Length: 106
Image (cartoon, rainbow, N blue to C red; front, side, top):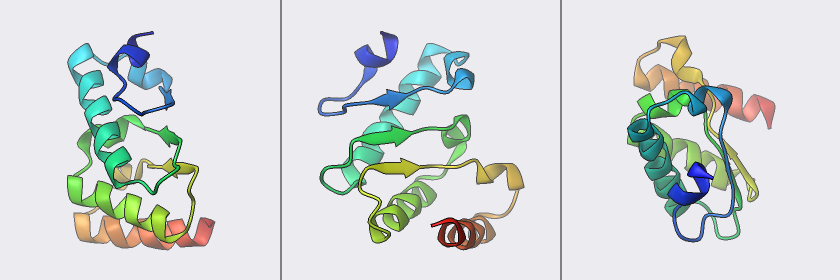
């Protein structure tokens, strides 16, 4: 119910991980703002966005990179932003690692 109240206009589905349910409301609102940003970048017709808690720490540039990679791979129904920040790499290496793993998994 809280998630539905916070959803941006046009958003159709928000899946909250258990870890997200433990976040303060202010942080949850930040998550929703990031959903809105991602929705603005998603291809038309995208309907599902899965967020992980690490997204709260994700630089906007890397979020945009994730979305661009998903668009480029024609995954129109699902964008999955994974927890690569656990790798504790510099942003440049993080982006390279994301690319490597993303395309290996697709």
